[in-house]
Image (cartoon, rainbow, N blue to C red):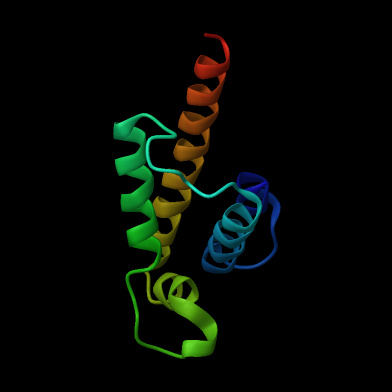
Length: 100
C-alpha cells in the first residue's frame, strides 16, 4: 500500500513519495467521475495536479518524478501527509458506502 511505502520505504521522503504515488496509481482502479463524493474527488484531483505540476525535466523520468524532486523536503513531507489523509478519507467513504 502507498502509505506503507511512505512509512517503511527506503530513501529520502522524495523517493518514498514517488514510489508510494506510483504504487497507488498502478494498483488503484481508475477514478470514475461520480465514483466518490464530489468534495473528495476535488481533493484527489488537486493532489494529482500537485504531484504532476512540473512538466519540464528529463522526459524519461516523468512529471511525477520531476515534480517531487523539485520540491523542498518540507513540501514533500506535506504531500506525504496529504496522501495519508486522502487514504483515510477514501477508506471512510468506501466503508460508509458499503454500509448503505
